[in-house]
Amino acid sequence: MRCKFNRSGYWKQVRSGVMREEVSSKHRATEQASPSLPWCTSTESVLYFDPTNMQVARFHQYRSADGSVIGKPDPKELYLDGVLYRQLKGQKQEEGLSRPKWWMRVWGPIRCWLLGR
Image (cartoon, rainbow, N blue to C red):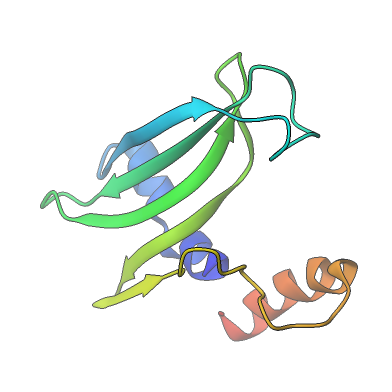
């Protein structure tokens, strides 16, 4: 789903003002959930809306105390080409795969570039 989100062009459309962004929830990230993040990091659920005010994406992201976004968005829902993609609660992006984490870091971008998924 991350690949679809990255290829959708939604981020560029929000930055150019064609679509709008809305933070639907925001709270302080706990140290247990994210021990490697800087102190005072917040966790946000963000929505993207198209020009007709239809929600086309929902994702999670971390934001540092200075307002900058940490890492990449983690999409949870994506409406693209008439199809609603949804990550089920508790389901990991690559669930069911027994490959090492380093392999997915290498293969994920290659798979996205080659196959578009």
